Image 1 (cartoon, rainbow, N blue to C red):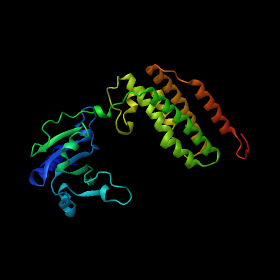
Image 2 (cartoon, rainbow, N blue to C red):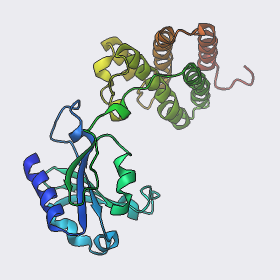
Image 3 (cartoon, one colour):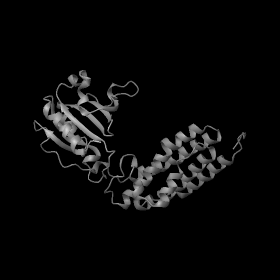
Image 4 (tube, rainbow, N blue to C red):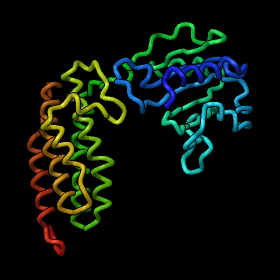
Length: 289
């Protein structure tokens, strides 16, 4: 596996030797001092370029970065709509295990690009495009303090969607139920846990992309309960995961409400819990509730 020094030298040499590349930057976790280093970190590189179309026309130019195991061109795919406007990206997994996320940005977008993300480190700037760029910071990714309205909306969404999951389980529509748990209900629970961490750390840190560092900041008991919300494919297990999510959500929500100085409507949780237990115990051939 090529070292970080070798990879960065390759990216810089490519930028220096190509007159179309006017600047090169590093983004993401490798610029963030609060992120632990490991061998699976991507190299998030951007080149500010003139004549972007010439790079796209000459597809073999990326061969200089090394033998590839897999290549994805998101802006050229039919399955997903392009999201980068005039920009073009290459997601490259190399045979040696290194991963490069390379984005070509039209040079005229330099000013807009410079303010999009605070985790940018300038590697090369031939034309002084980034004279005032601050040192990389993860402040944009830190947990944000919720308003009372956000808090109550999170509660409302969690409990409403819990009824959809229960309805799906009673109907024996397990995919419907699990999609609601996975796509909506658990994200509300994770949001509540994130807010709790934020209050306990004075909103001074990030829990990472997809909340991958959350385990560091919650108790082992809370983490174990969270893991119970990821069910296997059996109806009893999905019911169990639903009630585990409800229990942890209520515990965490009460703490967040205390930090916010607002009332936690426990009676609403209790009414919904009673309703969901009735749905779980309802015979499959029932014609009335």
